[in-house]
Length: 496
Image 1 (cartoon, rainbow, N blue to C red):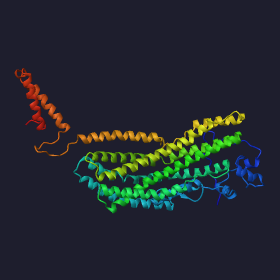
Image 2 (image 1 turned 135 degrees about the horizontal axis):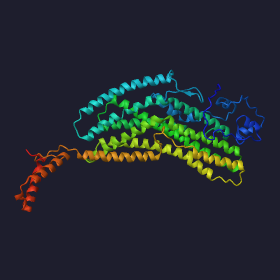
Image 3 (image 1 turned 45 degrees about the vertical axis):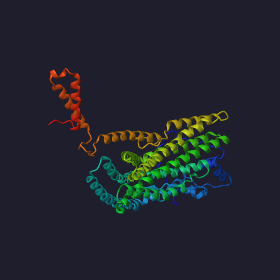
């Protein structure tokens, strides 16, 4: 495996902090820490380190000289979902090894993605044309039109594919940064990063598409005529949104697991060995992890801004259609609306909850570990490093932010639900004000807002135009006015 050299990245706060030299000079000269037990023992037992020209050892060098090191742990753990997304034309990146992921316009992966997108776009255009004709031919109540529009909104996720082309370079850079982080973690801790998310990713890549297809088929059976030619693109697009949510879930789960492991290992290390160099190394490692957390939101900025708005729109329409139909009893159409609402609410919740959990693990939980450290037995340098570590956790935000638009956390989920309730109340009030054509025996129909306004105006004009001589008998006038109002209400309040 060939070596590679990455261009130096801009430094962050305290990112240049390097451990001081110690008794095991050979270990420090070759990028291996004294307290990395597995590596230090080999170096002390006549281990000859490879020649170094002053540059950081590459992943290939570490992997070849240290059999305990496992490269690309993060990429291997999320690989099943990655491959599924690549099959449906998403994430057209090329990766020929650790820290060698890139996006190229002339690659076979991008050509396949463009061809797949064009075929899918023609297919979706054909389905959308049929749906538009169906919406134009509707003559039923307002809620029926809303349900028809729901099928048009369900084809919007096709926009995600070109958005991910735009963000593919940032995603490739994120994968490369994860590979660099794994090398640094191995150099400091002495073992590879134990994520153990591969089995979960395999289950997700198998079970989630099956559930997605079942939900689409059941929705079409209960809400419209089942046409297999039109169900296929809906299955593809629904799988796209579901697997993007699963991909986000696995990335945030990897961040959460890494932060937890790093905090536990740091706390155990402080109980036995407490040099200032060790604290500085863990501080640098935490800063890299914090940067990965922020870069996750920036790399997928526009994709998940669109996903959040799309899920908000779908959930609002589904719940409105469900509530407007429940007044007539729970019918077969309500089954599809219920499945659609619950599926998308669950997807939005997991996107927000996992990002919130990752941010809390990276910053809050690590700060708790630092605040519980006893400084009495440490020397002055170690205490200074602990204080610098605490300040670094305060100055470097660890929130997953979508490019400055909003933070992805539980507050976002709560805010979207609150806004959703507001829109649902407005829609239901609008539905109540719409007249329904239910004829009775007298040929009268329901009174609308316009009819009530005309009724009130007519009564006012009657009172203003009445002669003064008839105003004396108050009882007679009131009776006449009441009778006139009754007549006007039965005749919609209009005079010939």
